Image (cartoon, rainbow, N blue to C red; front, side, top):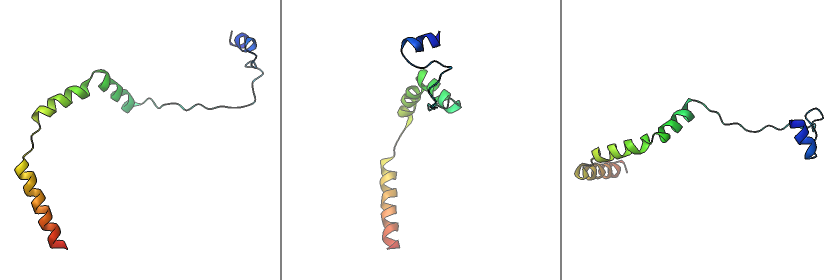
Length: 78
């Protein structure tokens, strides 16, 4: 069937060949790709993002104090 279609389109048959070898890149379908696809398919990334977003807290005073300490340390090193 394939040879018939190749003849109709004017291309060389499988037996005749073209004399050239072509390689097409293939995607590695391994565990990371499979798990990432499954994770996105089940929409777990958005679910965890929503859950964790509500529990994140930021202590502004502590953050500013640590920045102040870093600037004090950098002034001492110079």
